[in-house]
Image 1 (cartoon, rainbow, N blue to C red):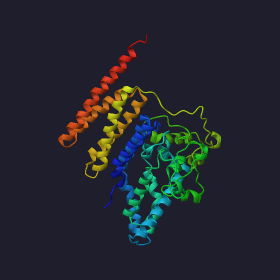
Image 2 (cartoon, rainbow, N blue to C red; image 1 turned 60 degrees about the horizontal axis):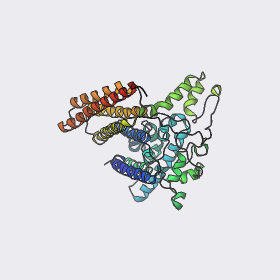
Image 3 (cartoon, helix red, strand yellow; image 1 turned 180 degrees about the vertical axis):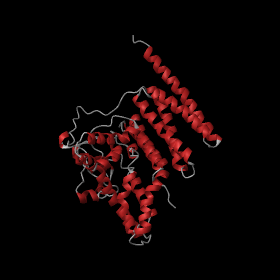
Image 4 (cartoon, rainbow, N blue to C red; image 1 turned 90 degrees about the vertical axis):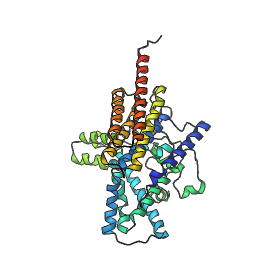
Length: 408
């Protein structure tokens, strides 16, 4: 039986995030910001929701090769498990490295690097589209004959291992730094400092970076994020913005070879007529500032409520998708993503949000009444939507009144 270990680990993720948050608050370390953390977690929820629609199709590719073209019939012994663990980690290294060196792959992977903070919520900041190509890198394991369920299990644990290394609370792991990927090594990987870019691609074992020349020790202070900041809390834009940049660059290129190279070359590459390769610039600490637009604190409670509704909806889809008909599955997924979009827009105080939010809340009530859910779920969900509608109306009314009151 295939067990979704990542889905089952979600409660543990949130417990550990709470522990790190409490530690940061107690030590006054400022590892967390509400807007950044909501944005990171929104990406994780969206990745799990969209992943529901692609997991079966992508797993079919590995399964088909295993069933029809495998070279060996491997027993499920401890040694085969160990060899497969090493194989999964090896191919993860190359998938991860190529995701930093090919623009078309970086366009998806970039989502994971957009946060300018570094805490456990960043581990959950995942691309919604990366799964469409990452599985291809592991197909040699199917040809060799490693069982698909074994592969899925070790691939999940490779991902789970990487959760805890997204922290600044652990400085050094001593001798373990020589072999394992650790928080120190992975902080380097998330740095936008020129010396840290495209380093430490390891999943579990740092030895691959040391063997293939991509290892960098943590030395100077790490500045997190990407070289051109996203400057947005919009979860949808976060997933498509780099594709938009690549497309615009390709349109400006008259030669077909340049149009193709835009997607195949490394990040920073431009055709000669657009100035050629543009390396990352050094960071000036004096002028460095994180994206942190002001938003009225009265929206904080409303944002948290909507985020929890989006999280609950996404979790229901994640755990119940096998039993849900297509209509509630699709409707619930769209509603969850639009709810996360609302959270980002509120944190930026977007003007278009007012009409969008009224439509989203009213459609949410309509959706739950039309779908064949148990009456208890309908009452709770419809009640939350009505409470949200009244709350948002009052917040918007207060905001409008505040704008009409002249300053003394």
